[in-house]
Length: 153
Image 1 (cartoon, rainbow, N blue to C red):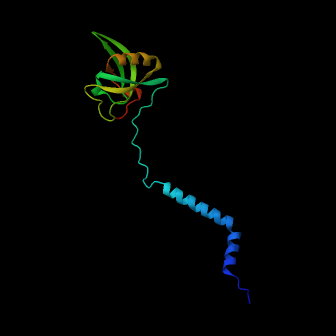
Image 2: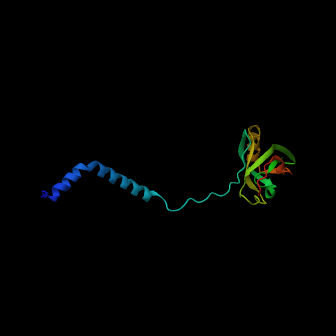
Image 3: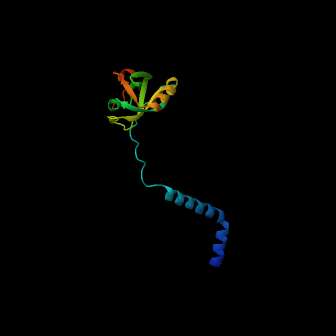
């Protein structure tokens, strides 16, 4: 006949024998619970389609206040920027690329706006100085898509 053992001694022996695997299992379970609690249940929202234009190599972006012609501008337009000083005008930037406006997908405003343009580094300083003195006017190039910059807006 088998020898009956005390249940407490069996439990002590099992606890001693399986101490490390039991500790590893409990640690793994705790990690799984913590990761599950930290995970958010909301799926990531899809990002809106990008309307940002890639700038040309060597160009810098400059914010420019526009006085006249802001209503006809769209992201991707090529334009020349003109400073009006009294009765004289001075061209301060040529072939500036509109990268961002005060609102995307719609005209930038009829009375004026601040737009972000991409210009060569050589023109950026003169453009910044002229923009700090007064809002600028624009000369819009007639053929946007000729340079492959049509944003599709």
